[in-house]
Length: 361
Image (cartoon, rainbow, N blue to C red; front, top):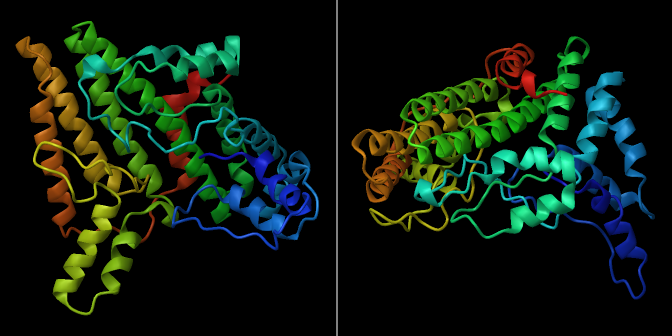
């Protein structure tokens, strides 16, 4: 989840009325991303606006339009999301580099664990100080982007859950509930990963093993959550590609193309991954349990082996194994569901209590 709603609500109108403007309309090209409906809802409306929009007032009406009725906790939740997730003003572009879907391909010793304290810094000292820390070039991988207080977003999720008895019959509510729960859990997973790396640096084998299992369990739980809505399934993506085929060979090729596009583009070697790995990563049920989870498990396996044997992390072996996993997965033909199962509200409530409740303020 990501956006800058204030810019969307003003930029098109200001461009249209600026001196010497040649602007005649508004268009969008989402490249099949299919996320953040609120951003595209507002952007679509800007085609009919002749002046900047009061985004706060627009947000106050948004939940009623989207879910079909007014529920006060839901409006309060959207006001929180407006000033947090949808107010990215740090100048960075969110590239969805959360650890689950963009696992670091680096030696653990090179990973800074500094981010474990960033939430505290954000809330105590403000956004400017946070930006300076994030800008420090002390990591060898593309660090997940965090521009908001996670505790505030978790509180917004709590308000979403409180609205569930009145809104659970709305598909758009269930979609947004799953997406927000996923967002909060993804950031929590980033913290778990850094905790595991910190434990590794301290030679704490027991803690690494425990945190690894907790991380992998979280991935499985998130896969179950995502399976509760048709909008978060891997199956439709693969099946839609296969339906375009005219024969068996073409169907196999098209499925390989679909799997490759969302994992790693095929210009890797046995020991060197493509630069376009995880370029099209997705939080989709099926993809987490069948690919992202097993990939993370390989990394954790080598962390534990390194501590057990008293050797350095075997980066070369890790790369060979996860690259092989990826290429094998791309050629598989296993079938994934195209229909959701499970109760989104119940599963989200359970995961909130299991992982996030202690972070709510």
